[in-house]
Image (tube, rainbow, N blue to C red; front, side, top):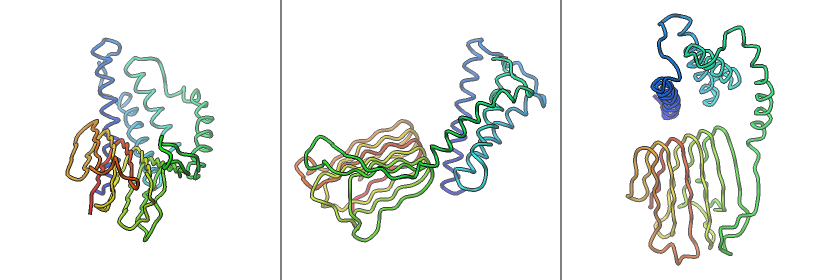
Length: 255
């Protein structure tokens, strides 16, 4: 199983665990009843939910599928399943009542169609030498590598739905200032390679996964790790990272 497929499997598993947990909690509170017969009428809503999630993930992985159709099946199946749990009434013939989703899909299509646009804005970290132009980029799916020869390090604010980031600062031109770099995303890995003579600070947060920063590790669920080199506070040329991921791995090494 590839790394990306394993991540998608973790997402689907997480969603299913949340759904099962909510259902069991509502049952324990006598809000709903789990006394359902194992029949086709009660099974096919679950099939709709699983199929919808599968189609949705195929879209994210660029393996066909349709996020619109996938999300519709998930929502439709979820409503039918809640009907089977006697939460509220919803039947197959009421599918026409979901027509407002059309407006939601159009709105999201317009938003996602512009998600790859690059933005430039002023950044101020509270120190005069770090004030400058901060490149911000938002993407839904994709991998990013900063490892070209002599690439210029600039303040960055990056967000990605699903994808990996790799920074190789041994091949970069690092200016004589504090350069802040923020990386956030839902699913992905972040790997940072830093020369030993460059001071840096890392604030890393991850919901599910591992954090490894020059020998310091944090593994499991809802983990955080902060680290800075001994010479960071007094350095004028330094790197400051803020990394926040949902699922994945964060790794920072010095060479």
